[in-house]
Image 1 (cartoon, rainbow, N blue to C red):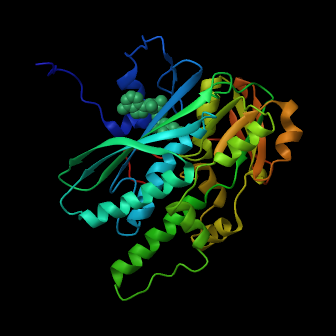
Image 2 (image 1 turned 90 degrees about the vertical axis):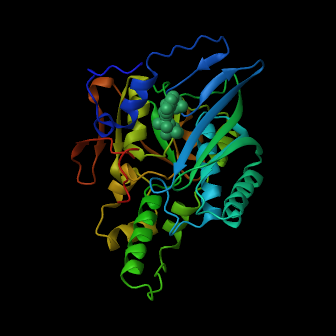
Length: 351
Ligand code: ADP
Ligand code: MG
């Protein structure tokens, strides 16, 4: 037996997602010459000749990442692909192929799975990627979808999380916090429906935040605009777990600190409105909500004017010395140390 009966039993929740990944993978060293970068970024980077191949996998689990009582299956298929493509763009690469693996219980009909695949098809068509394989198996309970995305990037164009330098500017695309508020609306309406199934859901005014939650897009136009303007970010990550958590990844891997400004964080009018309805702080949604799938990146100061001219990109702060920590200047001018409260894979945030 491999098991050592005297070993202490550790709790998954205590370790957290990132702690667990570190723990499980620390004894693995890359040996193959073509493995340029393994675990620790948005995607792995492989050298296959002229260009680099980037590979990323994400798994969506029923009850943890989605709730089929309110997520339309077509949207689920679409989102499962998009969240993976987002990781490929975060390497400054172009996605080319995906594989899709599913585990399904007998509760799902063939028609339900076809709906999911209609969404997968739509995402593949929109982002110009080919579905080239996968695996299908049964599960005792619930649905699991795992997507692997494969992309390509020129050798001198790849962007990691670890390249941020002191005085670089911190930029983010689009707006943040909406997907989290969308989730709150869905949870509220689900609770109302449970109380009284005759109630019709009230989604008016919530269209934007719902769309951000249910049908996110990957920011390929940002990667394209930067390439056209000949700006190569010094570091980049996609915002899947919330701005605070992603900024910490960049700072940790780049061995730097950062300062951002609350009033520069892009938050949509409808996100503010939804936050107000829930008596929730919109900045907290942006910092800790997650699932925005925007791109967070740093640029050298020399690229400031060019990047400032690209619509839909906000410059929210600058990279500082490691000793300065990771801070946010709040609206009232006070300086707050940022805490990572991203998604924890072992706690269902939507509960
Ligand atoms: P992202 O949020 O960008 O999808 P993750 O936080 O899921 O990234 O993963 C961080 C890094 O850890 C990635 O390089 C990923 O491939 C790797 N990773 C995650 N889970 C595992 C695992 N079970 N075994 C090996 N590597 C893993
Ligand atoms: Mg990522």
